[in-house]
Length: 113
Length: 112
Image 1 (tube, rainbow over the protein chains, first blue to last red):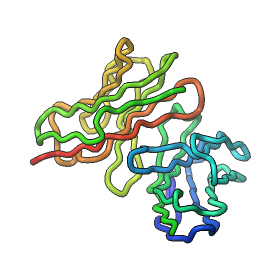
Image 2 (cartoon, rainbow over the protein chains, first blue to last red):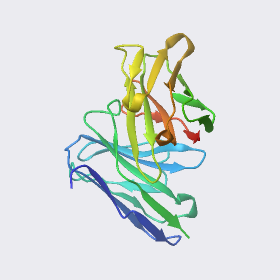
Image 3 (tube, chains in turn yellow, cyan):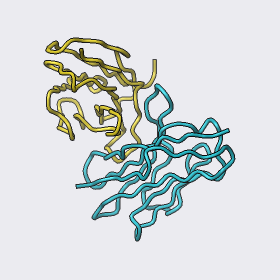
C-alpha cells in the first residue's frame, strides 16, 4: 500500500515490558517524526529523523528509543513501558524538512497497564 | 522557544454559521504556519500552509487563514459551517529548524 502505515493499530502491554511501534512510508521522504497525542497536550514531538542513520530528540524523548537504518522505516521502542506512556502515537513523514507538509499515519493506540 | 496558543479547546457553531478558530504564535523570525485537521480515529491532514507568499491563504474544504504579523496571529475561518467540518483543528508553527510545534488543538462542534 502506498503512503504511511503504522503497526500495530492497537496495543495493550504491561508496565516494564518492551514495546516497538512500527512506521513505514513508501514515498522515500527524507524526514520522519514520532509524536504522541494526549488530551490537553495536543501533539508533542518525541523524536525525528532527517535521513537514514540521523535521528534527534524532540520535546519528550525520555523513555523512548528510535532507529532508522532504512529510509522507509522508523520504529519507536519503549524500552520499559510505564503507565505515563499510555497514549496515541503518530508517525509522520515530510519531503525535505519539518517546514514541509507532514503526512501522518493512522496512529497506534497504546495502553500500558 | 517557539510556542503556539489556540484560544478555546472547544468551539461550537451552528450549521451555516461562520467558523473562527484562533491561533497566536511566538516567533522572532518570519515563521511557517500551518493548520491541520484531524477527523475521529485518523491522523492529521494539512488544511493550509503560510509561507510568506500571501497573507491570506486558501486551503481545502473552503477554509482560509490570514497571517497578521502585527498581531502574531493566524486565525482559521470558513464562511459557512457544514456538519462534516466537525473535527479537531491544530495550528502549528515552524521557524528555522526542522521541527514544527503544534498547538493543543481546538475541537469544533457543529450544531444542527
